[in-house]
Image 1 (tube, rainbow, N blue to C red):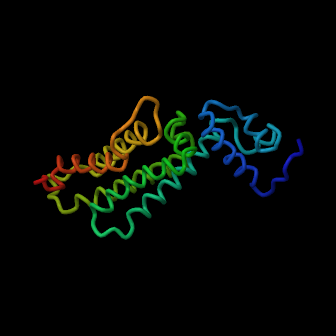
Image 2 (image 1 turned 45 degrees about the vertical axis):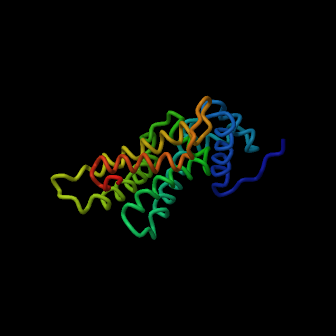
Image 3 (image 1 turned 45 degrees about the horizontal axis):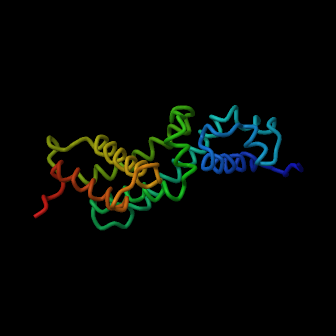
Length: 204
């Protein structure tokens, strides 16, 4: 096989792109670094100039995923008329991200790679969660301080709820089927949760 000519860091980007395709096709543990090198058109030795092993390659894919994820959450919240609308938009952005970037999503949440594997990965992952915390702070700003739930708790709950909807109903998990679209499931779940916190008025 004739090797492609990569220059000025292009090989690193090409390896991540190849890894994302392999993750989608085979899962995060279904391929080797040698296989990624072969599909990228280079020797395994060339890969080790950029990544110490498959886990580091997947960690870089996850890092890029969190960057995209953070941008999508921020963009979804921009231009919304109320704090509630911004908060709900971040949940929908989570579902959209899982659909549009399945390789990144799996690298982030299903690969077993710790966000603390590299400082860069940890920083961008925590930044993404901070986006949700910011929306939660805006949503609860009008509440008396003594009754205000921690923004970090609300963000964690909504993240977990969004993740559950994605895993069970938005990614075609075997044996699972919902009579409602994932967006409706998440929106109604968020509504019930926020009413329980007293952040929404009860239904008539």
